[in-house]
Image 1 (tube, helix red, strand yellow):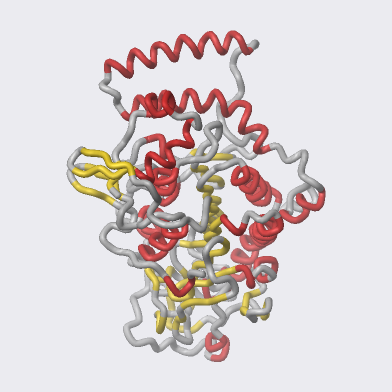
Image 2 (tube, one colour):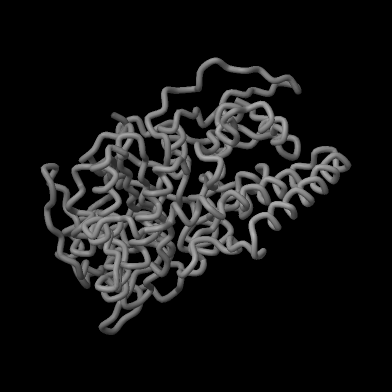
Length: 460
């Protein structure tokens, strides 16, 4: 499916559902040599309507969290002997094996082993689907993050959230279709070469406010409405003179969206009507200092999903533990473990997990050998084998796919790359990743480039 941009103003004039029509226009339109063909059915029957994408920025250690490798503790301190072993990234890595400082426990009916970093997520393992042999092409943070989010080692490519919004649009014309919480980094929310309307909206850059610049500057509503009418007329005149420029159209859309969001965003982010039990489930409140901020983001995410937001990314920062891994990984995990498990349980209890896809990802794992000496060792970057898990719509819950060797270094079965992850996510949303394309600079681009295959083993 080669998707062509459409003018938003005719779109809004001809559609009773406003921005919701963008879903059909984007998904069903096929451009071939300038012509447009309306398809009568989507690519696939979608299993998921919406996505929550958790991203742990810095590199969560797979062998200290969800991929139990007893051999590490058995051979702690011995030299790591791996055929094809890669050179270290920092120049500080020793050859000594580092056993995990965290104990692993068996959880759920599936008997999944999870470390003491994530006991709350551990209680949800029967709803999770683990991919244990994910591998990426780069040990560098920026390029690995670019690959995970945009399918390219180069910066500036559209993020996965922008692609999902481009293909499906939003079900709520009064809220953004793509939201990012927890980070200011542009690579998480960039639309790249896609039309600007598909850029992610950053929420909670200021913890006290969900979104900047939403407070009405005028003292009375009628004054604001008069200004909006005047600005709207100027915008329309400027748009005509610019030959329907996409950037100008996006700016107009942003003006109008900001106006309606003045009411919609405060309502969606207002947690005062949530029960005490729900707040406690997410770890929200003054008695939950470690989890309160991330818990609020997760709870607001559920409320946004209920209101039709298509794609939400929530970022947890600070996982790059080259030293003091035991203390810093534990501190980071305490902040997110209860909130993420709370969201999973809340979605399931409300019947939303059936058509919501949850993704828990990091740009790479960490080495089985030690970085640094002393009593506070860490681990180096390790893209050659790590873990990503998913939950929800269209997946086989309580299962694990793929396996690394006894040291958690290289895949020995079920290897999956980042393009495969993207292809599978789009598939669950009802999109054929090979047909979701956008023509830019003389060629058709797609999230998976010329790669990607479905991880069929994890599909229900």
